[in-house]
Length: 163
Image 1 (cartoon, helix red, strand yellow):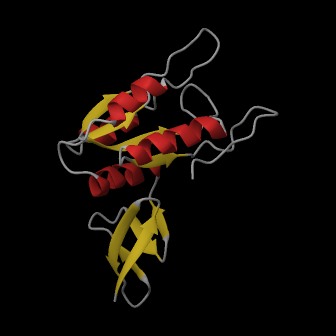
Image 2 (image 1 turned 90 degrees about the vertical axis):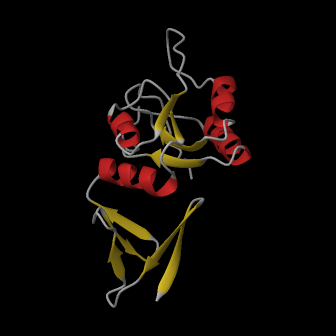
């Protein structure tokens, strides 16, 4: 039986076997209804880059960023587009003008968002995340939000998930 699984803006088709699961060709993840079980964050991101983009397309990251993201992009034949996070001497922030300019390129089809950001330690606000979502929606860019460090927050700071 064929099943479509909705995950954000991405739709994955999978043939479900009797046990209700199917492994990807590389067996990096298993699909159970609408949940994906992976061998780790890095294989999951690499797999999503392969499945959500085509060779030669651009994937946007906000630098500085966890260096493995670069490998997940380049090793899959995609191009890295950097939107640097300016540092004002106290904290890093998003440059929304630069971000929109780079998201508006039709070859940019995917953004990997780090929330909270690694390595700068920034916990993005609801307004910042909403603005990123609005820009990505406007320019038809899919977002992968790596939120593995969501439990590492400073006292008094609230973590807001991108979704």
